[in-house]
Length: 176
Image (cartoon, rainbow, N blue to C red; front, side, top):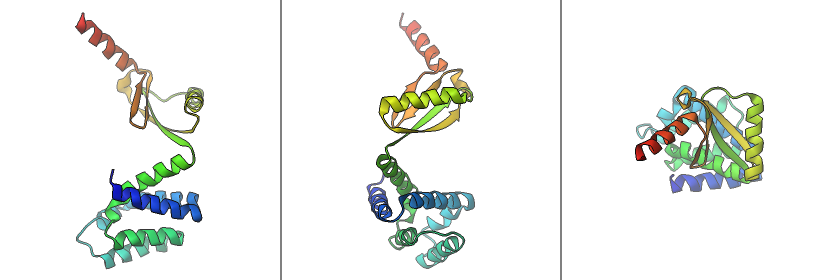
């Protein structure tokens, strides 16, 4: 990821800790949703739209939402420094910093079908005991797994799926 985005995320993260980090995180999430739902990112990220028009557009967004002055200044700075196109990467880095600060580990759990809540609780408990962190699960369904599940933790993939098991059997048979 972009080192410039990382620096902006770190600066905003540090500033947010002095005010209200939870609100800052919530506001960034809200801005992301506004961008996604309205396609405003197309205009903000466009080099064809000048700073003045981007500021006017941003003020329209702020008019309907109660954002902290720090968030307003940060977004204005991104426009002024022509870094607004880094916003998605900045959000990603900010979230990483937040999770590290709050001892949170994000885990992507993909299963062939929706898991029973008791099973999900057992998975979370096992992960918390193993990693000694608070776990946030992002659940996905992929019927091609046939059964079982996969867990993605950072860049590591733990594959406990029937599909993977069958592929391993097939590979071993090819070697013999």
